[in-house]
Each structure stands twice: as structure tokens, then as C-alpha cells.
Amino acid sequence: MCGIFGVSGHDAAAEVTHLGLYSLQHRGQESVGIVATGDGKASALRKMGLLGDHFTPEALSGLTGRTALGHTRYSTAGSSTIENAQPALVSFRGGHISLAHNGNLTNATELRASLEAGGSIFSSTMDSEVIVHRLARAHSKAPERQLAEALQGIEGAYSLLVMIDDTLLAARDPHGWRPLIMGTLNGATVFASESCALDIVGATAVRDVEPGEIIAVDSKGMRTLQLERATPLHRCVFEYVYFARPDSRVFGGSVDRARRALGRRLATEHPAPGADFVFAVPDSSNAAALGFSDVSGLPYELALIRNHYVGRTFIQPTQAGRDAKVKVKYNPVREILAGKSVVMVDDSIVRGTTTKGLVTLIRAAGAREVHMRVSSPPITGPCWYGIDTPDRKELIAAQMSVPEIANAIGVDSLGYISLEGMLESVPDGPSGFCDSCFSGKYPTAAPTVETKMRMG
Ligand code: AMP
Picture 1 (cartoon, helix red, strand yellow):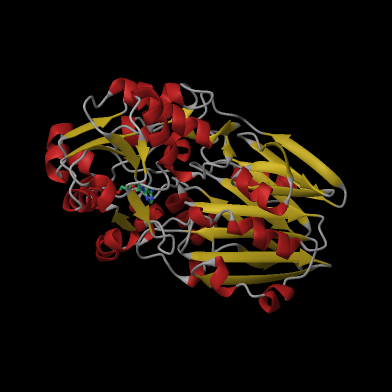
Picture 2: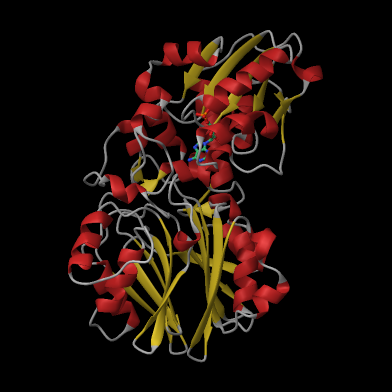
């Protein structure tokens, strides 16, 4: 998954982008980059690691111009290299093209092979580079038409920010998989993956970029192009469950409200009578645990403390890194847990490694019974559209039944929210969402192996 941010028409475009990216760091922690443009020149800064580690005021001062875009990235193993850091920036017909992508293209391998057969030379393993090459080959004059031409025949998930010379373009795929919101800031136009990034720069939210829409902004003003839109839409329900920040609005709905509703529904479907209290696996499950507490009447406790200096465990691409990080990341509070029967709420179980480690910690802290409740259904398939879920063989729910999982992770009881319970709990549900990793119903053909080298 990735975070994207862009601004057009601001004297401090790179600084605004830098600030906005701070609120999108949770969407990707492997690399970060900003490209700024003005007076026909473009400059880029791309680094591995976190934003705060590299983007000093001196480094930012080299990024001049009134238009900028930025990207925070995470990837699967093998593609975590600086060549794959975004935004991409290429020179083209005396000008330049820059691109930041959130999502995963499902037919990138085929498109890349045909471009390479025609002489294109790729400089990264990212699927997004296909779009850059197609932009360079497009014949249309107006930048928004050029992007529309480049996107023809591209399948899969993309929320995009593109700069063609001084024009900033925003686009979402026809299914609307990934979020993208537009705002204004003192006359400048701002785009961001999540509304929390508009908040941090002081921008006012205007509306979402629509599925299938292209918006162009430059000195001539704003132009929009509505291309074909899928029916139904396939907005990623996992954005509400786990990925987006709870202080954001995505797809027009509040992430916090969605998570509380998921927790309430979970408590209705899988109550835990006799338990002493409920606690969350922080931070992504806090709101769901509050919802569970509301309906169950169980007190909400802070039984597990998260170390904020450690990133999301999953975002470590190797299994060894993930295992060691569970203990570094979480510590139980013995005084709360000792002798108690407890409900632990988490938003998802993926491989089961974090969860198993957590249950061991909770029991070692003295809990008498551990009842686990999960605010998304069993994940039985990989995501092809930009969330970094592993192959089916690593997904615990693809290999085991719910009672077997309960046994494997060592809990006294395990309850997952139902698929319909989840879809009915999210804003604007139950239809128009992608639930393929839960339901196995994928709206596109399968990507080939290489397209797993995602940047999204
Ligand atoms: P595990 O126990 O190994 O299945 O990991 C489950 C934990 O990973 C949960 O606490 C989730 O909040 C978190 N999680 C779920 N999906 C992702 C993802 N795509 N990236 C990072 N963390 C995730």
C-alpha cells in the first residue's frame, strides 16, 4: 500500500507536500519521495526509510516550484529498492513526467512485455512504470486526454497523481479501489490519499476524486474528465477495517465510525458472556474494541501497550523481522490482566504470527481466559489490488478452519465478524466494496507473478 499527496498553485509546494506526507506515513514506510516542478524545471528527492529521517529543510529547499507531488511506499519482498521509490520522474520531449501511484495493476506484466517488445527500456520493477511509458507514447495534446489515453486497457487498482510539465493530474480507476480526496488551501488545489493529510496542511476537503475520473489543474484552471465507471464499484473495504487512519474520511465515510460499527456488530454476532473486560490490539483496533464494549457492556481496558517507535509489523518484508518485532512492539499490562477472563479485539488475522505471539504474551501476563474477536472475516485469499497480503499458503484462514485457528493461536474462543456483518457496518455499504480477500470473488483476471512486484 502507499500514500500519495499533491499540490498545485502553492509557493511552498514541496513543503506542503512534505507536511502532508507525514499524515500518510502509515500507508508506507519503506521509501518516500517528493518531486516539485516550476518554470519548466523538475527536481526530485527520493529516499529509503521514513520521511522524518531524510527530508531536512536543506534537502527540501532544493525542491522549487508551485506544483509538487509525493509518495510513501511499501512493497513486497524483493522490490524494496531505491529504483522503485516514487514519485517516478522522467524527461520527455523537452519537459517531464512525474507519477505517484497507490494500488496494484493486474495486467502490468503483459503491458510491460509489449512495451519492451516495442523498444521501451524500463528502469524499475514497478508496475507503475508502465503508465509512465504509455504517457510518453500517447498522442493527445491536452494532459488530461494524454492520461486518459495512457490508462486505456490498464486493469487493476490505481489512485494516481501525475505531473506533466506544470499540470497536476489526479485519477482513480473505474472501480474506485483506493481512496483519493481533493481539497483547497488558500487558492491552491491539494490531493491526498486520506483526509487526515488535508487536515495537517490546513486544507479544506472539497470532494473525492470519483472512480473513473481525471482532474487536471494548472495555470489555466481545473478541468475534469469522467471516463467509464464500474458498476458496482469495488472500493477496498479493508481501508475501513485496517488501513486508513481513524481520523480520516475515505470514500466519503468516517473511518472511526466504520470501525466502531464493526465492533458493535462483532459484539452482536459473537458476544463473550462472562468476560471481565475488552481490550484492543492498538492502534488499528481501538475503535472496534470501543464498539464491542458499547454493545457488550464490558468495560474497555488498556491492557496492551504499543511501542510507537516500531512500525507496522507487516511492513517488514521478511518473516524473521516480523517475529522479532511482536515483542518489541507490544507489551501487556500485568496489573490489568492477572486472573481475568479477557476479550482481545483485533481488526484482522493474516498469517497468525502476530496474533499467536500476542496471545502468548497475554497469558504470560496472567490472563485466565483469552477470547479473541476479529472485526473482519477470515482472510482466505491474497489482495491483487494493493494491500500487501501474502500468498494463500501463508494465510492462516486459507489453511485452517476457525476452530483450528483458535487452537493454533491458543485462544479459549475465537469469533470473526461475518462477511455480511462487515459489509453492512461500513458507510455506504453493503454494496460497492471489494471483498475479494474474504470472499474469493475477484473482479478482474489474476495478475501474473511478476506484478506482485508492486509499488502500491
Ligand atoms: P498476524 O497475526 O500475523 O496475522 O497479523 C495480524 C496483524 O497484522 C493485525 O494486528 C492487523 O492489524 C495487522 N495487519 C493486517 N493486515 C495488514 C497489512 N496489510 N499490513 C500490515 N499489517 C496488517
